[in-house]
Length: 432
Image (cartoon, rainbow, N blue to C red; front, side, top):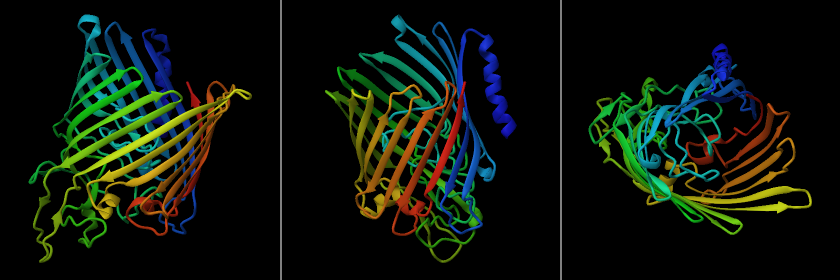
C-alpha cells in the first residue's frame, strides 16, 4: 500500500513533459494521538502516509480530469484506502459554450458553511475523520448542464451508490460496536432490499447569481448516505434497542429519499450571510417478520424531517500589522421530529458554532483557526477545535492542532459517541 501511494504522485510528476496537462498533488505524514482509553483493543495513536494527486487535460472544449487520494496507516490497516474524487470527461458545445455534458466520477461541494452542511448530500463520506468536514468519495455521474442567466441548470443521473467508509472496531473515531460492519444494504421502496450498489438515482439543481446574491435550488431522488442506520438484516432492531446476537450480520442500511433543498450566500457590506437547508421525504417504513424468536422486529426508515443551517461571517483587517481576522457564527437545527429522533438523525441536531480564522498575511502563510461548537439541547456536549498552519517553504507546510470532545457520558448519539476521544495531531505536507 505505501509503495502504491508513493508511486502514484511520481507518475503524475512524469506528466510534466506533456504540455497539455496540468497537475498538482501532495504527500502528507499524518499523526494523531488520542487520550488513553485504557483499552488494548483500540489504537490510541495513528501514523499514516496520505497522498492526493490531481491531473487535468484541457484541449478546446474537451476536459479530462483525474483526482484522488490514498492513505496507509502503520497501525490500523482498516484505514488503508485509495479513493477516487474526480475521474471524468466533459465537453462544452453550443453557441458561446452554453451546453456541457459530463460522464465519470465527480466530487460535489454544495455548501459554503464551516461545519453544518444540510444541502451537501450527494457524495459518500469517510466517517473516520473530522465530523464537521469529512472526506468524500466521488460518485459515478452523468451530467447535463445548460447556462441559464448568470448561472446554470444541471441534470444528474447517478447509476451507482458508493459505499461510505466506516471506522474499524479498533478505531477511536466512532461507536465501538465490538465487530466490523458487513456489506451495505440498500433499501429501495417498501419491499426491496439488496446488496447491489447499482441503484438508479437522479437530481436537478438550479444555481444563479444576482448582484451580491448567490443561491441554488435542488431536488434529488437518491439513496441517503448521510443518515445510515446500523443494524441486523436478520433482526433489524438497531442501536439503542435489544437485537439478535448474530453480530456477523451487523450492516449499515441506506434508504431512498426525495430531497428538496437549496443554498444562499449574500454579501452585504462587510458581512457575508449564508443559509442552506433540506427537507427529506423517506420511503415508507420497511417491515419484516423475523423467525428468530416469537418477536416481530421492525426495520424503520429515518423519519421525514427538515434541516436548516444559517451563518454569518465578518472579516476585519488590522492595517497596523496587515493581519486579517474572520469571525464566524453558524447554527444548525433539525425540524419535524421529536427531540430523541433529532438526536438519532444528526450529531449536529441543534448546535451553534463560534469561530475565528486569523490570517497573519506573512510570507509563510501563517493561519490560526479556532472553533467552538455547542449543543443547544444537550448543553453538556461540545467540540473545541484549534489549529495552526504555516508553510516551511514553497513546497512544505505543517498543521498542528487539537480537538476536544466533551460529553457527560458515553453513548450512541451526538458527542456521546466521541467522549474520551480528544486528540492532538500534526500533519507535515509536501506539495508538488
